[in-house]
Length: 226
Image (cartoon, rainbow, N blue to C red; front, side, top):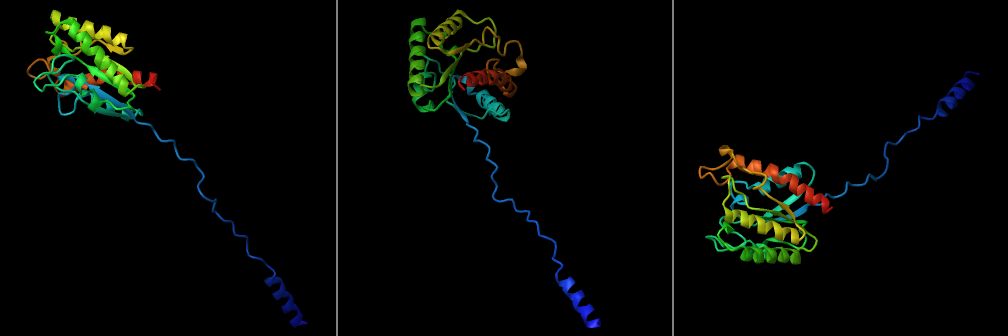
């Protein structure tokens, strides 16, 4: 009798199954990767105002837009002393830098200037600006043009500067570009703290000021371009 009871207990004990094991493996990760963010390529061709400083204002503006979620790569081909007609001391005009600076995939091509053309006839400036805008579009047909006129921090610009501004404006509009007039908007005017001791060119604070002007303009053109 005792043996039978022990055998029965053993059978019951052996028939008790361990708890089921529940796997935590959920298979390969099927979460889709976030889409790659396209970096907008922007070419800048200008005079001393977009070349001056340890970090010129176009690059500062590009860094700002990138931090705000609109990645931008700036290729800056600006050279002090140059204009659309005036080659300056480094013997290079704005239009002559287009083949080296502008790329086929550029989203925006920016021209800045130039006060350095103030002594040249209007007809020469008109011809040079028109040729520059056409050349840029030939290389980058899908790019939008952003044209920023001459910058004159001294206030009360002379007639030659106003003439250069008017010609650049008219040719920019004819080319379908977005035109910005720093003279009418008084960029850098009336604040010596933004300028180098020469009273003409931007210091670091001036470059920050110009970047704050330029960044929203560039964003607006990029957003129109998709």
